[in-house]
Length: 209
Ligand SMILES: [Ca+2]
Ligand SMILES: [Ca+2]
Ligand SMILES: [Ca+2]
Image (cartoon, rainbow, N blue to C red; front, top):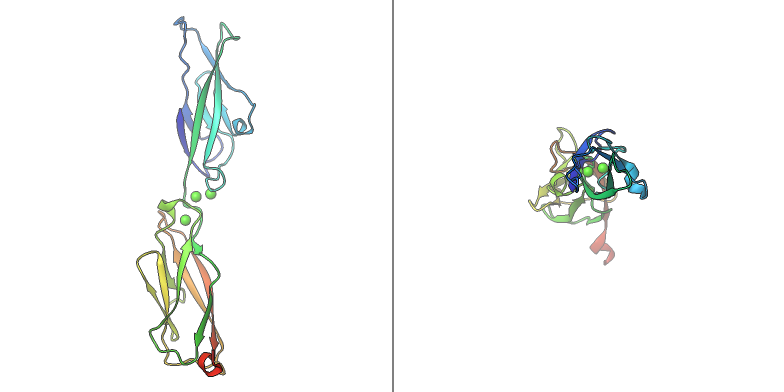
């Protein structure tokens, strides 16, 4: 058997039902139980008479995406005769992780940079599987006001570029900019998070670098 249940489902959620076939065709009643040998078996319960497996734990797919359990079945008339039914349980993904920047970007711009230049390309990561993750949407997180210093351009490939907007930047006026970037994932509904890029202004060519 292979069964599926969503992560974060509450304890007692039905996962599926096993049916043991009676080898001697005597149609005697079967009793189901879980041999608690493996630690994983404790994460599920089985109804003794129906064979319905239910969750006994709240699962986190990002932690463990698959469980192997063994359901035992014995005839009530003949309890010594036990058969074992292996069951694999796949934990299905729920969009429960917001995307975040793939790394800490150390962004430096020159004072005499030209407007419209790409100063950094950013990408994101998401712990969920692709359906709830990797279709990222980037935007500058600044409400209604337009950023006078930088623009963000989506590259339509799960990356975005940060571009200069000013004709020049002056260290003496402002030597560091904090640029809040909002990243949304492709889940239904989507999750989003805000990360702040730190952009430092350097003298660059004037220092001979
Ligand atoms: Ca999770
Ligand atoms: Ca998830
Ligand atoms: Ca996600």
